[in-house]
Amino acid sequence: MKLAHHLHLYQPRGNDIYTARINEECYKPLSKNKVLENVSFDIGPTLVDWLYVNDKNTLSKIIRSDKGQAMAQSYNHRLLPLARYDMDVDTQIIWGLKHFEKYFSRKPKGMWLPETATSKRVLEKLTSHGIEYTIGADNQNAKSSDTSKVFEIELPSKKKINYFFYNKLSGPIAHNSEMWQGSDLTYLANADYALEKIVQETKDDFILLAYDGETFGHHHKFADMWIEHFPKSAKKKGFDTVLISSVNGEFKEKGYVWDDSAWSCKCGGLVRWTEGCSCAGAEMDYKKQLLSAAEHQEDLVHEIFENKAGKLLVDPWSARNDYIDLSLKNLSWQEFISKHFKNKPSRTAQGKVLDLLKAEYHTQLSFTSCGWFFENIHPQTKNNILDMQKAAFFIKRGVGKDISSGVKGVEWMLEHVS
Image (cartoon, rainbow, N blue to C red; front, side, top):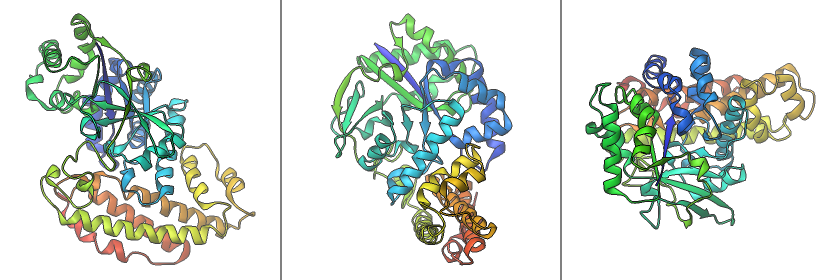
């Protein structure tokens, strides 16, 4: 029996104190104890950026642990099926790929979709950018409860992508307090207990267990030691611990995935992030209002960007895809000018385009899924609104147009951040 783990490593922007705590409790010990060498993992660009500034040593160890099993993540945890325009899905994927390649010095074969939110349209985009596989939850498997296969999804274009559905035991292992006794003396016993549960509940030839990385050491103290010693316990019980990248071609079967589905919204597809649902504890009016305001402003930003920047750039959307190369230092500003401007621009024209690109960048950030995830208005909701404000500011500075009416309609939420 083959057993694989996947860890989803992600922290949103804007809470340095919380991220620093999780780093000390989780990411640092996982990287120090070489846990990540024995699991597949994805790591979000926002977390990589934080580690680059605050803990280069841990980031270096995470990168060195990669043997080909690390997966990319789309850029800023925007739910891609909810992106209304294909160009925005492209940009999220391209920015995520560029970021991954900058730090890991290779092209990824897999990409984690935020909240595992998926659709055939999004999967088509992944394949068009060279992605071979992704991961989803057991409830996203459209025609089977089987999670022991690598399912090959045939898309409308006839392209194919491999889909791993993680085993339903992932949730109980991550959240069941029986597994975590809070003592460094019990981690081996807890690994044995978890393995006994797996043996009792499944006879599958291949099992994928996937969790948030923060499970190990943050949500559960000493759990980083649990997963460190898990391979030894598994071997004693006849399990072969593997990386999913090594079984990408095994156990393959034709599969189907639910459109507009996600791991943490089992009652209404993606309703958790649009209007609220029982998965999030309540139906909250703020979600619908915030989404409406963000989409309205996005339309305005896109229209202005295409019309104004389009007069100066060869292809404004291609230029937006390369905008991330400026912060990654893949391109200098002069190289960007040479590549994307129609003619040699004046300083005024350069400033205008740069402001419009910044507006587009903050518009993408304003759709970070964390802003809609919680029952109540949350600090991440505040971050999304602040990005809307920044986008409006750069539009006003760049072309003199005031588009702030939409964001002003949701600014009351800033006063309700808990």
